[in-house]
Image (cartoon, rainbow over all chains, first blue to last red; front, side, top):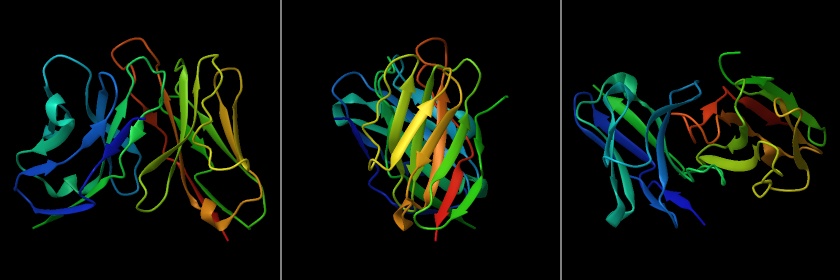
Length: 114
Length: 117
């Protein structure tokens, strides 16, 4: 069965510092990978997704993620964090054909300090 | 509407009562999902509807939980004889299914926060 592990429950970074959120997945076929963000009191918003092609994908708000098949990872990065990036981040894996529901990790809460 | 709509946004009920949560997906989306979000637990899959196929109910935690989707559009999640551990935010999401640039992407509603006293 597919699964997603986000090893870091909570990360604190300084504003302007770089960020990397880790995501490891387990999936039997070619995965369809997503990162979602949930800001306080708001719904989940898609940051970026990977299906095929270039393994480095760009998303909204200056985020990017790199798919590494050999490591079963899809880590999220941002070169310079802004205070408004403080939120909960969820990685998810799914089946492109839509035959199975997306499976989400437990999330990583990001705090940003001045 | 433009997005996924859920109602009520907040529901407080007493233990043992039944509750119904409603989801109105984005028009034309063939797939509809229900997830449950508890503090520190991430998103727990509950049930999945895809077109006219039989729903995937594998995530429902007990037989007190059920869901239906009428006419391929609006969905209702019903929790019977609510327990305190049912307290959570229930999220609905819809997806365009297997076509177009948004294939597989989930569009989430704001959620229904359920509190069982």
